[in-house]
Length: 294
Image: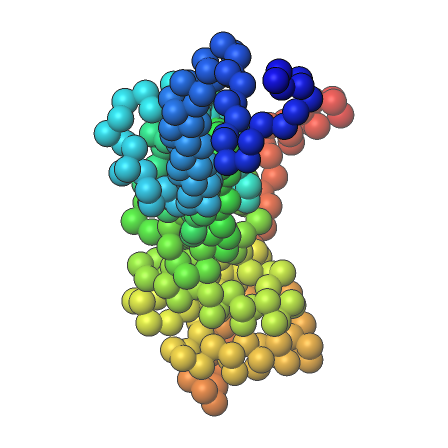
């Protein structure tokens, strides 16, 4: 008897699966090739991102040596200097700082060493300290702290601007004419204390023209009116106080005095300036006057 088309197949016999299409077979064959490629690409992206992150967080350039042996590494990746920012400059010559920095726009970023640049900057007499940062892909930030001009020092025919510690900064004194002027060997190393003492005595400070170091032991003051004040070694503060009191009492500093000697603690010696010579008449003017009178 013929089996009905709807009659179920006997249990225990497996059905034959449908044959997959040609597209599905093509995709299955290439899946084994695509997966390793994707994994390798992902791994390369992670490593590259980590390297870029380390370099960006390394402003001092401590990993510079890792890539310095690969010429064009940074340039080929577009890592070139695009900006150089300098902060803190007041008096230091700009051209000197540029030479010390040793980088300009367009240079390979990774070829620039922040540590070496900092050392060159701090070798400049004006620069007390420097901080140099390199930010990828191409920004250089430089912060400097300058030594502050404190006085002008004249010694052995040389005139220099010095800082408070007595370090010479520059021989360009034109723009610092209002600073205190100190003269003599060793005057630079002892100027700060004497300048501060004078600043506490405005009457004396405003009349003082030059501070002279004598024998690298003590000070003389030369006033603007020509008076010379001889101060004792190590007792300058007490001597200046005594001088201020005498001026308040009798106007001593405005009198025609050649010198005031305060080297002895309990004694003040004043030498009066010689009178100015009488003005002599001009013979030519006298002759002219007689000619007019006839």
